[in-house]
Length: 316
Length: 220
Image (cartoon, rainbow over all chains, first blue to last red):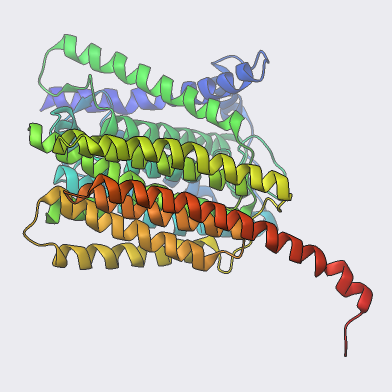
């Protein structure tokens, strides 16, 4: 029990420390493929340290909600990220919350962020929050369908059980899982505001979504929100790794060597995923805002098709 | 386990065909439509070859080769040549938006699965599977023909419909090779006829050009 708690805490703090590096990897990959030197891999850490030292300026019109939101968003994102099995299955928290709970946590965080963006009373905040709601209302049905598909295959919504099932190789060669993977990647891109949907690197008022919502934040509040969004990227990468590529994961209670193997394969998997994300981002251009429903419609279509195919093969 | 793997691969190939049908429905550029159609034909060839292996029926390999040579190579190249030759507008005009047609495609898929599951009870699971997906592919091809104004994309819809028929045929045991070959050739003939029609339509368009209408001013 105590050992399990220690591992769970290690997992949570490891994610917290690791997630800025993932952003660094994505940026470095993008820069390298554009034949630029790019900032150092540690640059996100420096940025966060700088933000934590800066003074906070608050809009006059902001209420308590504006100050509370960064803590809420950060806590919920961190909690959700530590619920996903990373290097090991059957950690302490994994019994308390399943995949649907993780989606609910992220949804709550998003709800608060949208409220806070409206709270400041600027036009950009309102714009960002309405756009974010548009994306969320389209991405969440797709996510729920993905969860249905995975849960139908693994007969559980518990992520540890899903990973264990996938490691055991009983899933076989199912087209539904490939469709669910493709759909999950699309949803993850939209949810994290990566390039075809939102460009995290610009503050161009016509296109920004996430940046528009956090435009009024500064200092430590901005730093907390930045960490939260970094944790969210790591969460989705770990989710893909845990459900679809769970090899090398250790189980709670096995030896220390399997723990290290699990940790190193996890870091390798996330690093690879981050570089693939960076590579994908230089290949595509940001799409128009009104194209996003089509993009997420494709994700929903894939997930629905996955469920239908699964239903057919089950009913035979 | 072995049988299970066979079933999984059949399921995957048939499911991929359905997926590619949806992707076809979703396209709004002419050349990407042709590329996706090529993928459609390639998946069909793979499905036919796989069925040939599973059923140990060598003539299905012939079907696969026909699909590969005619449908994945000859037809897309011809259509591409037609597009370039006729300088057709590269964007596809749709009667309804891609979102609505994809949703309609889903209803058709659900319909065909429901119908086929009821109709083909008691037969081999692989056959049932292939049949239900094949019907869905056929119906989506029909939907594509109904939902597009452009002649080339209607041709692609027609060809994908025919691919669905072949998928049904390779899944159901015992389709003679003669039928297979004659179907393939009739599709080629259809392509030629459609090609000639396209040229005729083009000629007619040149006569009733929109500029000619502007010049006459119309009657009010």
